[in-house]
Image (tube, rainbow, N blue to C red):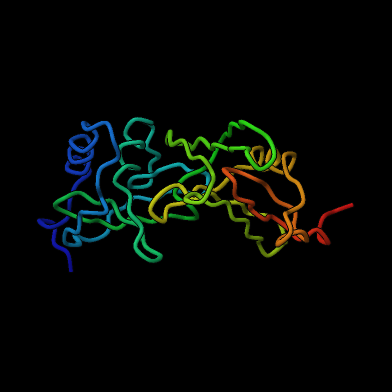
Length: 195
């Protein structure tokens, strides 16, 4: 059981995130393995909105700070500093890809996603696109952002991806998908495409 003395507060997390941010890069959370201090009442909803104690966090800069110290271990999510690790809830993916930019064409095309927290993610070998389908068969597309963290690709961006889509190369010629950074990402078998 975690006592009040062990429970971190958000001010401590903010200070630690700001200190890490001063380098101009993402903090090296992969090197941090502090003790678990318990869960805090923080949640990231499916639409990418961050909540603390039931209230949306309205400051984008604060959400960005928290996003830089977010870590996934298995199915759980944590905010991590060099001194502490606290659990938070994530309803779906922790980020939302809200826009995209496309350069080039065909196999040399590069699709770069922009997330709700300001990350720019070029889809490719290290940042794969995957598409799941919910119980109704509707697509749920994701792109890997970093270290096991994904962004749900919003509907308008996915429609743009579909417009850019084509049939796969030899090994995946039965698939409809998208090229980015020299990698083909299959979305749907061709025989499931609506006429």
